[in-house]
Image (cartoon, rainbow, N blue to C red; front, side):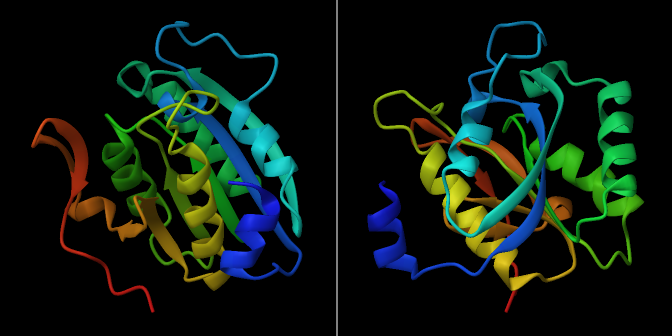
Length: 182
């Protein structure tokens, strides 16, 4: 989706300062590189091309989420704690996005920060990638600024405590009761 198309649909954005923490996952094509940090992140490049966003970008790891360790999670927590930004976006693989979300929700209970995890089913740059739409929805959700830890995917907002990844009808999806975000 081009910037012009996105702005036509969502309207122009006001400048927003966010922190983007990169954990890997399908959204950034981290399916098989055994955690090696990339020279560039497709999610970070996409974000830099968006108007009205001033982002601090930190690569924590670049792993299939099944390979994320406690040390990786601890590094993410430390970065969130030290971040001066109130709006946090985390790219993450879908296999364990809910588990990481649960940990963050416990650690940051009562926070004034909006912390969103986002993933994709098809990586940036591939035919039929949903990554740009997933990122766009996450950014639009960040503009609302509701404090807490959430998963933003497939045009829906998920509470990590009530979310799981399931295989149904020939595809993976996240399921839970919908959150009342408004």
